[in-house]
Image (cartoon, chains in turn cyan, yellow):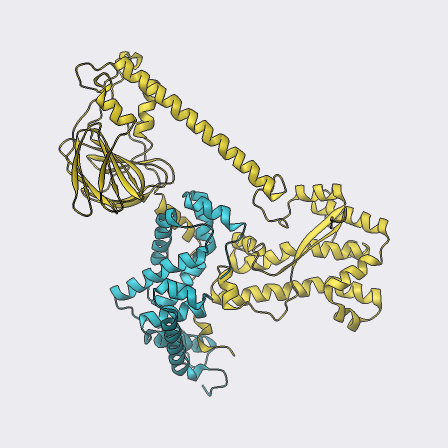
Amino acid sequence: MGNVTSLERPMLERCVKQDPEAFRWFVGRYQRAVFSLLGRMLGAAAPVEDLAQEVFLRAYRGFGSFDPTTNAITWLLTIATRLALDERKRRKLSLAPIEDADRVPGSDKWKNRELGLAIEEAANALSDDQRAAFVLLEFHGLSIAEISQIVGAPENTVKTRIFRAKEHMREALSAFAPGSAS
Amino acid sequence: MKEPWADWKVPEPSANFTDKVMGAVAPEKPRARSWRIGASLASLAAAAALVGVLASQKSTSGTIAADVRKEVQLSSHVVAVLEPGASLSWNGAHIDQRAGDVFYRVDKGTPLEVETTLGKVTVGGTCFRVRLDSEEAKKGGEMKYASQAASLAVGIAVTAIVYEGRVALASKNGKKIDLLAGEGARVNGAGDIDRVTDGNGAKASRDPSLTPGSPGFDWGKAVAGYQKELAEVEEKQAEVERELAEAKKALLKAGGDAGKGDRPEYDLSQDDWREMREKGQVKFQVPCDRKGWKPSASDLAKLALAPEDGDAVAQAYSRSKDRLWSTIGPLCTKAIGSASAAEILGSDACTHLILNQESRQSASDTFDLVARIRAGEVSEPAGQERERLNPLAQTFLALTGESKAFERDLADKFGADEAHRLAFDKNLCMGKSTFGGARPEK
């Protein structure tokens, strides 16, 4: 991931000093990335907004030890990933209920819904570690080295987890792959 | 090939998510307590500065992080004054102090435990009283603090300074020390405890003439001491403010554009346009010609966007190209007499071609007109009025207005603030150009 930009750095330095205006900027800038990670790590039924709030609270408290010359998004995703992994251990997460109105076979909405459920089901079959590595690589563009740091596992282990995760996801979602008969 | 999980949807932040976070980070201050120090107690302002009576709140448990000095009533008998940067959580008589400096006042007989990463402070509470015998006392002013005070600084070491009463400081490795008023100790990362001395509270407590309740206590001397301390605090504050002002000036200077602060160079205000008009310049940024391009997951991550935001960004680029070409394309076609040739040249080359067809004076007048329009001095022509402008003016009006148009497209999906941030994010591809004025030095 890219280094911190010249515009970000003064704001991050202000965040380190717990300047509320700068922290408001920080939340606005990175909230979508945090929601994206938590949503995919925990599934549709999780209280993503509450957990995202907790991620930013932890970031706020932890800014004292943050180096503003380093990449804020990687640091924030580290916090979010660890919270998500803890949350997965803490409770069994279930899938979101399906609304009948969306269940009109053949409609686009129905197809999207079916695909969404299939993706979640496929992801639920991954181990927590596989899921974290997969989401961080596929949806956040992090490097293997960065993921290795975040999840605290050797790079080769991360690569294996990603390989297995992709293999499983492709197989589980083969019915939805382009060119399939579904 | 697109992977099937590329369509994995996730929830979007609610519109007020940022406000929610900010509310949790710095809880709103409730009504001030009745013992807020008023102007009539000016001579005790130094004491107020120490005590930091700003606001209070009471709950048996909670979490707080302070961005400004903040007083929190943790229970009926415990008040904590957090300095900026301090944070703690509390549950009954147990406090988990995570960071920063916190001043605690604990009523007599109230047990309290303050835990940090390196050590634990246990207090039983004592009492001291402040009586005002100066001008304020004659007016009936009297303040009482039933309190025990300890100050903690958490970082590479924990320091406890006792102003009144007695506290026990224990490190994580089991070492323990009892501290009396006027004493202090520090626990380092290895768990070793060393005694330290502290100026203010320690010294005040050791000197009987400055210790309330002691036989030789001298109110006049104590108040004078507080006033001196206040003067020092004010001096320090003024110094910090001067440093801050200097730092801001330096920042502006470093940006090379006084008044712009940390605004990106091509985020142009009407003042910027007035300034450019003086220099005979026109500058702008337009999205790169990327029709059909879609940002990758890595691109989106750099932009702090979610994967599903890629379509909106790609569409904004596509619309930008169409919008610019709808103006530049026909003008370029007319200039060279061939639509297919214009298509091959593209917007950039066509812009230079159109510019080269104008005389130096006409180009200069055109830049002046465009700058005046963007500075808000002349209204922007539309419709037939715009079509009557020379090709260069039509081209440059399109180019100088494109950044905002692109931002508006992004705003449909991301909201105005986020769209503005994205439009000037260095991770989005933007073509930046400056025309007219003095040639840059080589």
